[in-house]
Length: 310
Ligand SMILES: O=C(O)CCC(=O)C(=O)O
Ligand SMILES: [Fe+2]
Image (cartoon, rainbow, N blue to C red):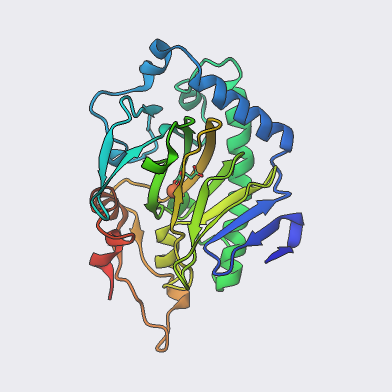
């Protein structure tokens, strides 16, 4: 289904509203091309340069973005088989990820971003600002659709803006590797820039997977689990996975929006949505506590929500 809505943002929405693409969204095609170029150049830097951002024994699953998050690079140095927690099958993970906070784009924060490639700070700064505006708009539209105040996600709930630059190197045998195994994202919304396909999402109704074809200058929005909580189950979280390919390196850039992880932020179904006929499906919980479960329990897609279900 594809339709245009106010302010010329176009949303291409897949059946059950868990994934959609945003077009005409205020981040120009030139800027998108610059972002992909600068990300590609980043990963081509000499290893000594890249290693400035790696921390020994750091696992991707352990990261907890906070406002002071320094840039970190998670490299699959050996690309060796690991267990996929969900079904215990061995898969070779085939992805490196460079991650850092992007907003507010304060001087001291930007000074921790890479100085190389030369245009990294300028291009990523511009892009994150553009995506921030689009993301606010999309969240406002979701509020409108749900019947919430349009600033429901503003402030504390969307304090963390996190950028993930994923590199999936071309792979000799895509049948034994996974770019990303099936998962749901933990925050509210992930706005993804992808130049090549390989992203697949799963239909809730029949469990079938289908490929999300890239559209130049479109961002793919994936609902995270917390959106399910705030909407009291009305919006589903998007289950997705990434395959690898043997032809070209693939780069994707995710912009995640999550609540503050300062131990104080409380997540709960929006009170305006609750009634006798729509009682809360989740109790209130601390975002920090939830994230700990999210990063450790991968036994089910939504395992992190289990303790809070009513
Ligand atoms: O590379 C992609 O298309 C998706 C990456 C992803 O799932 C994520 O950043 O959470
Ligand atoms: Fe994801």
